[in-house]
Image (cartoon, rainbow, N blue to C red; front, side, top):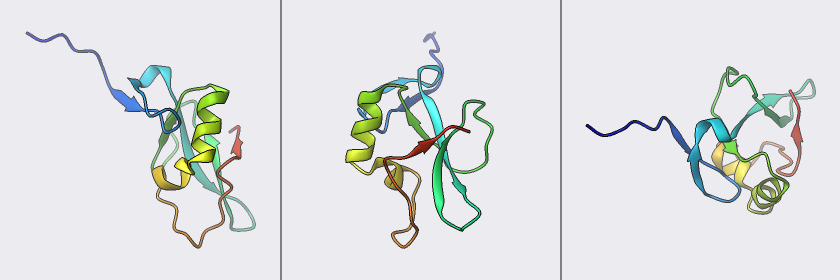
Length: 89
């Protein structure tokens, strides 16, 4: 019988497939003024689509450069989102 290794996710920065426990989940949150911001979901319980990222500066920079949060979280083009800003939740 094949050994189970658990859930695997892809880092949106470096695109490496990694065990879910080694990545940090991020989700969108709407602010009071109606704009969107990306926030960490350390508890992995917040509602909505999640984007997974290594907790490394290199991966955060690559994700911002590639506008990966916008793509992974399926943000419409008309919504304001700063791909380089990740707020702590």
